[in-house]
Length: 309
Image 1 (cartoon, rainbow, N blue to C red):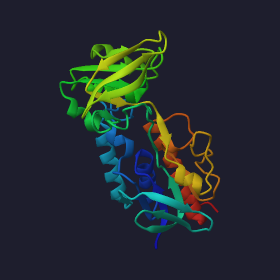
Image 2 (image 1 turned 90 degrees about the vertical axis):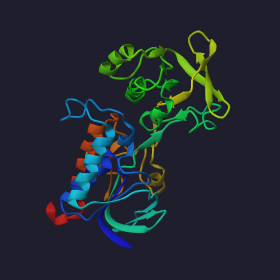
Image 3 (image 1 turned 45 degrees about the vertical axis):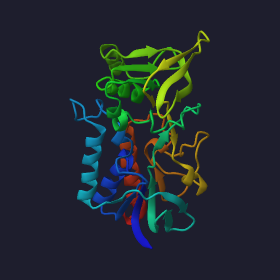
Image 4 (image 1 turned 135 degrees about the vertical axis):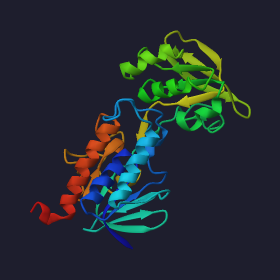
């Protein structure tokens, strides 16, 4: 069984930042991710509020820079290896994946979150055949076609703006009268010709071999209508990837987010959490990075006890 000073679960913005700080401080650091390193950054078309990039930066480019920095300081990243179980009873913590078992002195959980689903008829059936949760990944497939974006936050709005450069027509459906997205993004919606469908919910996604239409319900008037589109992009929130952590005895709140203190400590000594998997109310790249810096600093203190004794 391989022995590490620090194991980080998740290679998104938080996990990669923790990897930079952990390895740079001299800890033998391993980062595990069930998917490709970069996490949610890989599917963010454009970021305008990250400090140091006045013209903006793509999520993919930012992720590549973080990965390179991790490697520079010696952190090892293992992709496509899913963490199944944590054994946290002793001083040495055991991380079991679908490929191996590892031993570590400290663990930082930065496993992020996953897309919520509408859970309406046709969503599962047409996933990959017109239903998508990633505009950057699948947008080019809809060049010159009509698409519907569902949601009211930054991800939904920025994705709609991105798709407006590709699709012939973009609709944005939101179940309320107001969008949650930042004001700077809202100004771009009208400029891009994106049609907003207020107080609108999706009741059904229909088609044959691929999506052909959606049935929409106006929760203010009670009316239903069919909208003919070729693609449906869903951005209605996130669910934390915390099931394995909860099963190991780490405390989570009623929504499944890991509970941490100001030092990113969980209820189990030597176990920390950072980023979108935590109960911190602001889910941004910057806040995930800040949490990860604190978590990695505290993990270093925990592993190198003479450092602060």
